[in-house]
Length: 363
Ligand SMILES: *Cc1c(COP(=O)(O)O)cnc(C)c1O
Image (tube, rainbow, N blue to C red):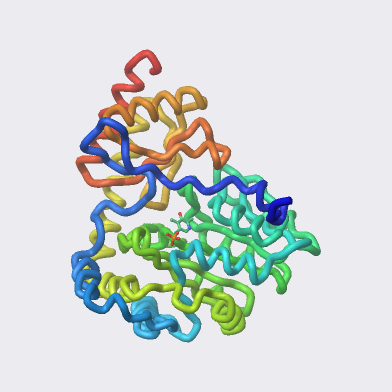
């Protein structure tokens, strides 16, 4: 007899991150993980390096200074912020805290996969709702609610589709859900959204005791490798998260680097302006060569090749040119590839390569 895990855990397919190397190719452009086009902020790099002589010290378990800096930047009460090793960790803790055997977690058909992974790990049944034009549908969410529903997860904008719900729809969702259902709004890409009808979710958190907003330093702030995310939540939820999180889940380096990243002058504005410009350019260029590109509010686009084989062939074609993008078959989108908006040069390389691909025998 060997030790046996809970059987439902063996039904979880491990999350596969974006690849970063290609055998035999020196210059690789990684456009598979939405890491941002500019690397880590210089001030964050300096803060990280400066910490080296202090690495033997445990971090501040409460991440006080970092929470204060986040609170100041976003106009939020630091007492209602909790940091995590990426927002992924906080998503997992929320599932553990509010899910469990016999409960249901609702997410949209092409929602972020970590909700399903952590939900299953917590014992929840995952309920996936249909979308309209690859966009979460509030009516479908509300129709899926049952007495067992405890959690609703919505990435807004969503990864990998890039689509978003406007503030009014988000409010309609919250208003239509039972009061004891926790709504988690994952606003990982909030900084990239230009639409004026967008709301990251803080006001909805403030309006009640049953909504949480999660954010990350992995995208616009360029610190994916260090792992830092945060949640803004009602006091009772913060209390629960603080009881079950690892005591030092935000490490010493990321606390310093995170504070420095927030203080980097003009960083977010520059990244957003670059993204808006080159996302539009890339969308137009790929559309011009015959692809369907979904309108995206994030720092990536989802390109539809009409069938799975062609999408795979395009992926192989791009890899041979040192361009790594993301297959999204695991999301139920085998006919599509997700492409991060990189530098101007990288956008050009992707457009050229896919132009050549579509003009070839596949076009
Ligand atoms: C990238 C991403 C995250 C961030 O994950 P971290 O753990 O903070 O790196 C969260 N949600 C979505 C939808 C994402 O795409």
